[in-house]
Image (cartoon, rainbow, N blue to C red; front, top):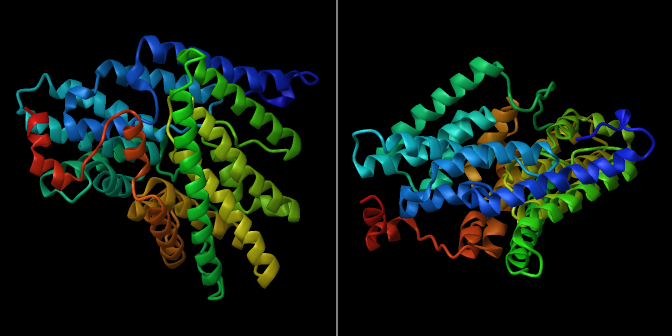
Length: 414
């Protein structure tokens, strides 16, 4: 994105809006006419391929996903790289597997293995990658797959760390822990509110995406440009009114500030900033994704959770007069809670916070907030988000045991 320091007068406003708009326009043209299978997160595509046959995954789509995700996220879309990495890795391994002298069933089982490698590399979190693959892609514990998934995640993490170094994705200088038992009530309340925010995020995304899919008055290739323009306008609003970024891309820089508690230096203003950023990020991500862009929602979900958690940290500090470190603690817990409510991978939502930050002292607060967020959001909307996205595309997934009973998997793998 454009740095305001290098843009004279108010010209930065034009560029902040124009850059994601142009990025969305180029992506829209390519996604409509060249690689339509590269749209969206990438995780729904891999789930569908695992359920109904690996031929659904195209190597061309994987290559397109690689470049389009870089281009669109880099130009300012409010999307993440993690979901696309899953599709890219699965598409590549599927291409390789088709040229190996192995059975169709073995090729089919390599898809979740590749998905685990992608998550491990994107988050530098091999344990979370294993659990997420079991929870979300496979849907049940399959002993025949587990060994391959574990090995792939471990190798991906080793390679990633050898290139980028051994470090968590998010740097937290302070080792946070549960300071006061009185905070447990606040963590429980955070989980309940996170469920509501997750429901707002989910329903807004699904409904707007459905509207875009049915909006034929404007050509489909223009839709991502509209999403980019709205995202750019939201980013400008945040920069002017809140004096901060974080709307574009994954927002990891601002997220790291929240985890470090540095936003707490602004006092009550920081509470308003974090609260506003929570909803502005949801709006930007919903438009970036629902309009047909190429990118994931993992990183935006974590960002929203951190801002929401930070709000509760400020309230905890004001009501109970706890230390300023509570902002960072609640931000960490909020990340996991919104992730659990939106992505519906409850165990992953706990482990991924540990691995992304290197902080293992918050097991009890995380369990309370995450399980409440997951349980309540599941009660409101039983169907997981990725399954709902596939259903909008006319693909209905069954439970793994139902697929095996109906012979879908057998027919899918030949």
